[in-house]
Image 1: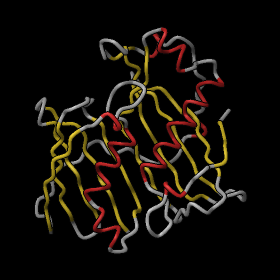
Image 2: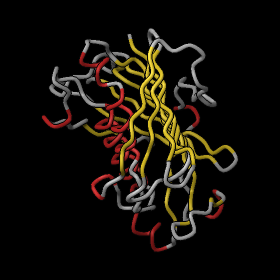
Image 3: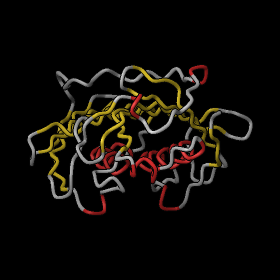
Length: 243
């Protein structure tokens, strides 16, 4: 069954107006997903002993109501389906009455930790039950293409530091989201509210590598295209829609 916990948010999870940061939501999703796997007897340590790890490839968050760090909210997660080599997991944030504040759909692959080779779902150390009836109506975009005529464009280069890494020794997905959000901070400071945040993780990035971020803005959205200039590979792409 789905795993539900109270969503614990703290002062460092807030933007200046008290709204929760997108990377903080990503961290909360990571943690409850791990708790959910634990309930099915698939602990992180067991997976690492088997040289396996989950790697996220896409995430789409749709904000239905503004989330303040002072709200009493609940976070639910459920694995919904396996399609080919892709595992799908959804998240919902509600209040005590069930009113929906945010919903998120994610997709993952199972990877050999040492070789980073993608594994088949049947190779997983244990079966995880899936609940297709719990699937949200969030649809992950196939891909993001450059904007034909953006109203503005900017480029920035960021380096990956030790503090950006996670337990799997790669650029953590919440840290990746932070890089993306930093590129559109002026819009948030200017009073625009994020309606949708979707990020696609193309290639893993490592300590010391440099990421070139190109942001293209339209009237109601921003698109961030990140290339790893150390390796020459695309790192991630991101789309942020505003109200």
